[in-house]
Length: 313
Image (cartoon, rainbow, N blue to C red):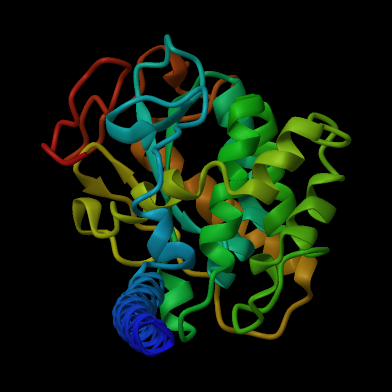
C-alpha cells in the first residue's frame, strides 16, 4: 500500500513540475512577444518623432511662413488682396502713383523735403494718390526684414485711418527716426512702436500695437511685396500718372545745407507736378483739382472702381 502511495506521489510531483515548466515557457513566450511589440512601438515612435522633427524643420519660417498665413487686408484698401492704397478726394479727376520702400534713403530724402507738398496736394483735391510700397531693399541688404516689418505696421496704421497711415509713414521717413539703409532697425517691433508714439492717432492705441506685435498684416505686406515690378517700376521713389513715368529735375551736385537741399528738392517736385497736372490751386492757370492737365502720355489715372489703364494691378 505504501509503495502505491509513493508512486502516486512521484507521478503527481512530475505533473506539477511539467505544468510549471509549461507555464514558464508560456510566460517567457509572452515576455518575448511583448518585448518585440514594445521595440516596434519604440521604433515607430522614434521614426514618428524624427518625421515630425523633419517636417517642422522643413516648414517655412518667418516671412516665408507669412506668405502662407491667412490673408487679412487693412481697412481703407481695395483691389486684389487689398493692395490698392488710394488716398484723397474721391472727386479728384487724377491719380498720382507713388512707389516707395520704407528703408529707401532716397524715399526718405523725398519725404523730408517734399512730403508736405504732396500731402497738401492731396488735401486740396488736386489728385488722389495710390501708394505702392515695395520691400526690395531687405533683399538688397542680405535678407533683412525692416521694409517688410514696417510695411506690416503701416497696414496696421491704415486699418486705423488713412490719416494715421500718412502721418505714420512721414514719421518713419523722418530725419529723427529713419535709419541708414544698412541698419535693419525697423525689423524690431519696439522701434516701430516708438515711432508710432509720435502719431496722435496711434499713440496708446492697444489694437494697433497688438497688430504690430502679432504681425496681423504680415501676409498683406507680402502680397504688396509681390507687386514688385508693377508697371516696370523697380526703383524708388518713382512717380507715375496713368502709364507715364514722371521725371523730377535733379538737385545740383554742390555744397549746400540740408535746408537749402530741401528747398531745391521741393521746388523740383512742384515743377514736375505742375508740368503734369497744371498749376496748383490758387495759382495762375486755373484749378487742376477739378480737371487738370493730362500731360503728354498721361491718362485719367486710377479712380475707384476703375481698372488700371495699363492693365497692371
